[in-house]
Amino acid sequence: MSTIKYRQGGVISAAQRQFSRAARWMRRTADRGDAVLQTVILTPAILLLLGVIIVGGTVALAHQKVQHAAMEGARAASIARPAIYASQPAARTAVERDMIAKGLVCTSTDVSIDTTSLGFDPGIPAFVRVTVRCDIELSVLGIPLIGGHRTITASAISPADTYRERVR
Image 1 (cartoon, rainbow, N blue to C red):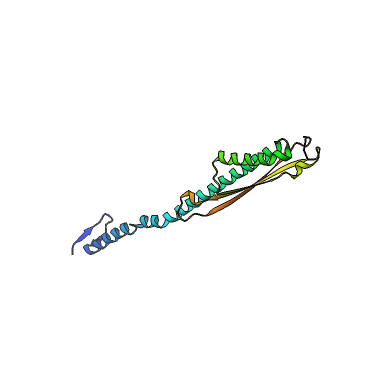
Image 2 (cartoon, rainbow, N blue to C red):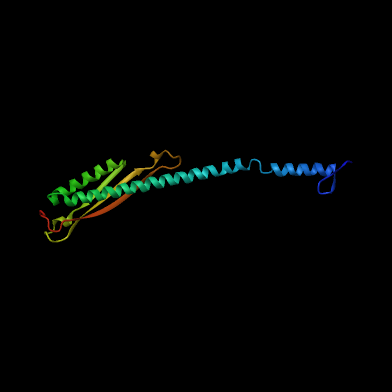
């Protein structure tokens, strides 16, 4: 058996040298393929998380648009003249125009307008409340496994001028 002298001063046999080469080769290749396996396992989880973030952002933006439409409708109803007759159509028109301008597509929309306080005598504080309900379709996002619809409801109140003319 041949022996080889190493720098440290020790002497090892050829069999020990072959074993140490094999051990080094095993240590070097033991982690091979781990990155591919980790990628295969983590990719669906990351894509699902990304889909949830996109859906959450879409719903949050839609809620902001519905809230803005409700505020626009309440404002339009509170400044409409004559108040008791023109406020309802003005509010509906303002809500529809705002939703179209913002690019919000609803499968169904419901606008309810409360103008009962506009019938009070001048000098008594009055307000208009507008509630907008919008159903959005989540399947239009094109994300697999995520579909259905979400109902978004927003309400806004706008004060009417306390001393303005009111018709009964």
